[in-house]
Image 1 (cartoon, rainbow, N blue to C red):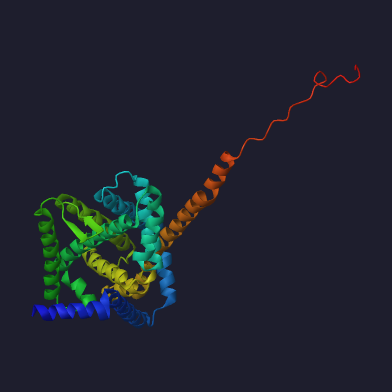
Image 2: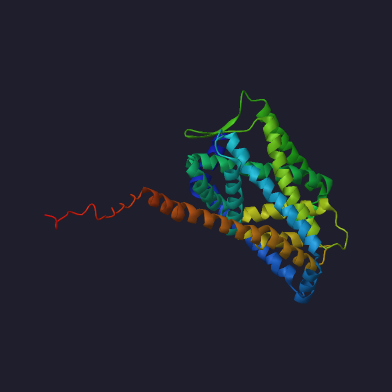
Length: 353
């Protein structure tokens, strides 16, 4: 049996590989999402969508914007936590905040977050002496923070309100509750494994080894992910239609599943995937009203942060690549020689001779 499993594993690595499997899974998710989206949007009245947009109060949008701002503030601690975990104490918070914010917003909006976000992080952290291996560790620990937080909240939500998940995964409520128990049990096993190790646990081999946070720090890591997710979900909750009544737990479970599907699809900005999952998962809300809410949420959470990140990085590159070198070159230039003024006393008295 062990030999059979080894053979299957070798065939999988040589013939298929995780990269190809990931591409196929992404294509399947995107295809199913687009099919659902087209089916759901059939018969949508654009006039009702515009009316629903006009009915959004300024206070409602402002509160949602504050929640989004708090979510991105929490997001800055992803990189700071990762930096401190790998021992890079010399990198200040402002650099971690810049890297975390720009790499997430640009990477998630463009797609292929692992590569685009990693490239942005390397461009920023290389000025502080970090190598590509260091950046890979930061990406790994930041991703771990995201998945631990989402898994923890999703597990609680599927146990508490399994019907919300059933609207998306079409599984019986009892199965969803078992999945929720399994998710929380997995986190519990991970924490136990971390806590029972001699010293800090580590993953990897040869030249790539990352030391995992201790159990108390892992609890803090989960908390960072939960707070970030909570602010995002609450922003969506504030923008959601007020009628019929929708409890926060139901929306949170659907929101998390939609977010995870969007990440797994690698679609730019989770476009189509996130929206289709929200529309399918919240059938009790009017399609037009929910579409208006999703449009405002996309502007607040995707469009404005993306434009802000592009502007910040553009100004930074202009300063580092153009203005700063120009100022340094001017300092290195020798000062022009001062011309000596001629006076009548210094002139040779040719006339007297």
